[in-house]
Image (cartoon, rainbow, N blue to C red; front, side):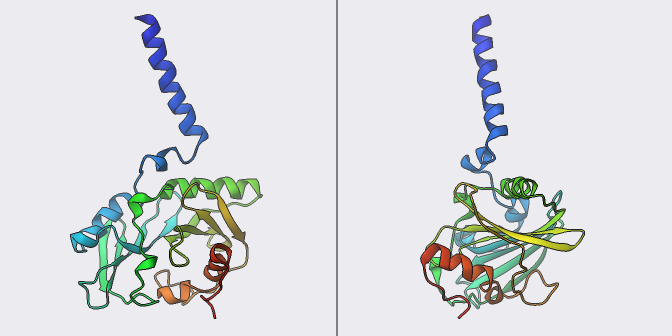
Length: 220
């Protein structure tokens, strides 16, 4: 009896140890992206398209991401896509929004298949920043395909006291750092996090497209 209890205890400690060593432990077993925020957003979309997204964005302090935007593929809407914004855990806005490039379903992904959760992406960003002598207290992050038919990538913009630090791109399969740049990427309105997706397909997006596919069409 004693040996059986010791065995179970050793197994439990092993699991705890592995989860501490590997930041991807939770993601491998399907930890959800966006948590309750995603569930709130899904209710605003036709059930047939609740797991078909073009991108997911989040913004806020590292300790509490309080602004989320979910860009669903939804052919029942007037523009084939629907953006749902959740702020402080409540539905804030729902609107039809055209995806560019238009009607290209090769950019759609299912977040339930993601291997790197939001928390794990932030953990990896924190580890990378610490290793390179940088710090941050807030982020603007997004998960999407930067080119058609490639795996989604986490792009995390880091800020310290509201000052831009850099942008980190992570592979959504295992959390590998794809690239880092301290150069601020081009964007739309300076303070508009939920700017049109067309502008997000420039700058860093073009670099990633070229990295993954060998082609550069995004900013041409």
